[in-house]
Length: 290
Ligand code: SF4
View 1 (cartoon, helix red, strand yellow):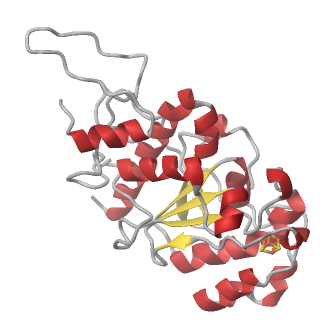
View 2: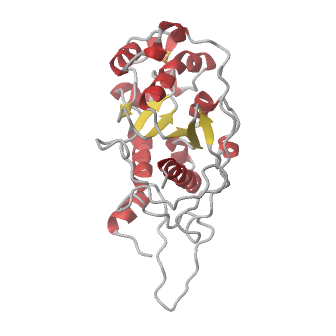
View 3: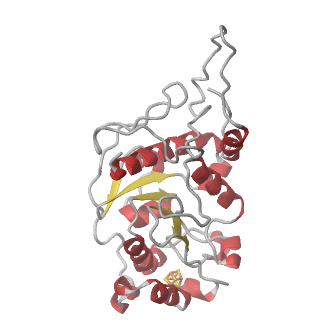
């Protein structure tokens, strides 16, 4: 198989090495050690083009090519998350956040002082994207650039996320609900010096994210990073143990994967992230009935 220049650029954008077919008559070695050497460039002509499965919850998701990407682990749906994911109870829960529409929710986030992070933030980071997106990306907490710009996933991590999304036919730019994602963070305000979010802060901010998900009603949730996973699933096992399964958030499938910022520090893990994306595409297609 050969890749167009644009497809190659997308895969390179994810930091993935391109595998080129050997000339006819020369079998040439298949880079078995590099499972993402030639992932499917699904974005180009057939968005989200991962083969359909016959069963939505038991069979492993087929990947585009056994030669280029190993089969993803069997997908198993785990138990729904506990209702109370963290011990502290958010003061916001009593303020009717769960009933707000988009403008009111945006206003509530902008003026929120429910935790101490409001004191050091420059901007709240509400989230961006299609308000009826079929894909929703949940990240962790805003960093310095996000705090400055008021937008999630900017900078190098944002560029990698864009490349990852593009590789499966998605975008954060304006498009229809099937292709434009909605991106939100677990926390809407930046923790000082980019420290980890505290349980109290996660608990206080949780109603905003839950309301965003309820309003978007995505078909698939992609949880990127440990704190996004904790917030959605109430699970704090290592990501490596939670990957490869289809988790559940109140009836919406959740695929967990590494945060792009982590992938920038650990580029060898990009192959796993690609597997996670393929699993997510497969689950999405099942939801589409394709
Ligand atoms: S992090 Fe969330 S709960 Fe805390 S002040 Fe910001 S919006 Fe409010």
